Every structure is written in structure tokens, then in C-alpha cells.
Image (tube, rainbow, N blue to C red; front, side):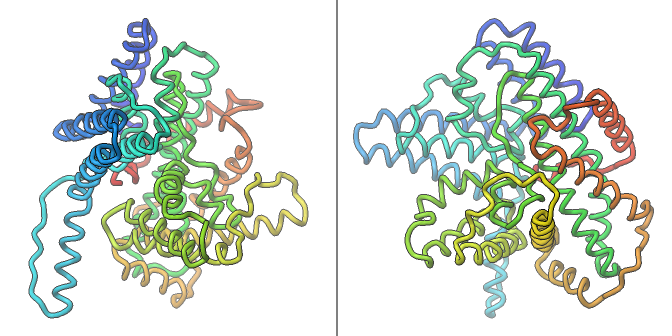
Length: 477
């Protein structure tokens, strides 16, 4: 059940009405309804994996209590590593076993040994990386005595399985979400209106931008050997806006519908394509994952302390793990490695903490340089996205090579598609709207907000009818 489906358009209002008008007497009834709704939502993907979600929830709930109750370090460590081991074990089996098995067999074949990998015929459970990271952060925080264990199983279950963030984040922290689910929520009309506006803008990003760009990006990447330089450059740009519109659109919808239930989720995107260097980009892109790796991996490794060689090591570990988190394919690892290379000059020159302030608003000579740095950073990002999108590293390298050697910049038609310039114009308009919104709390606000809402809804209906592409990219992670 996708957020942009008719089934979800029926599901969400029903849950909303039951939540505020039937089960609103106590915090417990509100939470119980949201858990039932979340389990139903997850079962619509594949009910067979509900046991995995329930088991993961119970495991971290129980081990968290045992860690807190243990009177000695040996007991605390036992329960801590039990939780970490089982969680990562499930993630490894479902997501990475076949990858490692096939890669090992290929390595043996390359050195002259005949090897036939033993592969598992399993489906990757949707959202497993996200809810596993919810539980891991909770257990780690208890182990290091940053928080107390949660003894109310219903409250903890909602923290892990809350349906807006269940299958594609943002990756929540117990310190942020658990206190909210432990109190009764009261209906706030202003907050609900903000939520509706954020849902609509998320749908615009997904249906109008991401799905339309996906049609072109898929056609170009699937037929890159027949495309000229101009089309290949457009393909990389279209994919950049596809993945941004897809994932940030999902996050906007998740945050918006949570406001309908009186809950506040962590912000996941902060206009990343307006970044002035790659370090700023990673402070603005997939914020919940970036900060998760920072707090639970980068800082424990030593962070930015110690020698430059140690800092470089930590940066490469973080980016390689981030790439590997996205999928069991060497293309994702390469994507992470490329971003680490981008980050390296900033680290060596101690410029990785520049550009912490907001992007200036005034148009002057200095702004020309700022825009130039934004375009440069976006170009680097698009090059890395080619490896993220390509099926193999070879395909990615050939794609980029053809941009350089096949220097033809005449526009091309794509089979059964509309003209490229129309989509490029729409993306340009979207960039201008995003630029105008970058300092606003609500994406659809200010003067003529009723007109803006009407235009947004019209665009969603029109493009939703036109596009055949419905899936969310990040559901595979």
C-alpha cells in the first residue's frame, strides 16, 4: 500500500477518524489503534514478515529492560550484544547473504577455483533496515545510559512500528518519539492544517516530479548506449530529481500525516541541492540516517578527533557503510566511496564545517559565487548518482564515458515519450519553488495559499493519471 495509492487514500482518513473520534479517550487507546493500523499497513506488503517485525520489537524491548536491570557489566554486555547480533544477523541474512555468497564465489572463480554459490530464495522484507535501526539506537542508548528502558510494551511497539515511518523512515530516536507516544495527544487544528499542506507538497514531489522524471531516467539509463551526451546528462539530472522527489516526498508525507495524529517526526531533508559543498549536502540529505551513523558509528570510532589519518579512516568507513546500507550491490559501495573522495579535500583543508549558516537571500555579486558552488556540488552529486542508479559499475563507467566521448548535444526523442525540454522546464520551475520555500516552515503557505493548494492538487491528479510509475525507490532499502 503506497502513500500515493487509492487504497491509502481510504486507509488514512479511516484511521484519522477512528483515532480522534472513537479511540481518543486515553493515550493507551490511541496507541493501540495506531499499532493495529501499522500492523495492517505492513501486512499489506507481505503478511508473512509480520513475525519478523513483532520478533524484532519484542527482542529489543526485552533486552533493553535486561540491560537496565543487570547489576554488572558482564550481564549488560551479554544482553547488549545479543540484541545487536540478532538484529544484524536478520539484516545480514535477508539483505546481504546472497551478495556475500555470490561475491565470494566470483572471487574464487577469478583465482582459478570452480565455485557455485549457495543462494537463499528469500524476499527482502520491506523497511527492515529502518525498523532495525530504530531498535538498535534504542538498545545502544540504554546501554550507554542515555535513556531509561521503556516498560510499556504498547508504547515501545508504537515507537518501532508506527506506520508513517515504518517502511522508509525517517529513522526516529527513542529520545524524540517515545516521550510523545507516552502522553495523550489532543487535536490541534493548526497542526492538522500544516500536516495536510505537507502531505500535498510531498505528493507533488512524488507524483509530479519523481514519477515523471523516473519515466525519462529509466528510459535513458536502460538505453544509455544509444544516447548522446545531452540525453545522458539529462538522464543523470532526471534521476537526481527522481530520487530527491521520491524520498523527500515520502518524508514530507510521513511528517505531514504524523501531524494529523499529533506527533512530530524528525526532519529528513533540508533542501540538499542548494548545498555549497559536499559536507553541507550530507548535513541536508537523509538527515536521520546521516546523524544515526554520526552518533552510533563515527563518534565511537573517534570522530574528528585524533590524527588526520584516523579522521580519513573514519570518513571512509562511514561513507562505505552508508553505501552498503543502501543495498547489496557494489554500485552502492562505489557510490559511498566516491562521496568519501568528495569529502576528503574538505577534511584535509579543515573546511568540512564551513557553510553551517543558512543560504543568503540577497542577490548580489557574492551570490553569483554561491550559486556557482551550488551548481558544482550538484554536478558532483549527479556523477555519484550515476553509480547509485546503474545496474553495474561497468555500466556506470560506460555511461559517464559516453558523456565525454560522444559529444553530441542535439536533443533526442525517447520512445513513446514527450519532448525532453518540457520536463526540463518543469524541473526548473520546481527548483525555483524550492528556492522560494527553503526558509519556510510550511512548503505551501503565505499569500494565495488556497490557490497554491488548488494548483498542487490539480497537478497531482493530472500527473498521477498520466504516470505509470508508482513505486518508492527507498522501499528496497
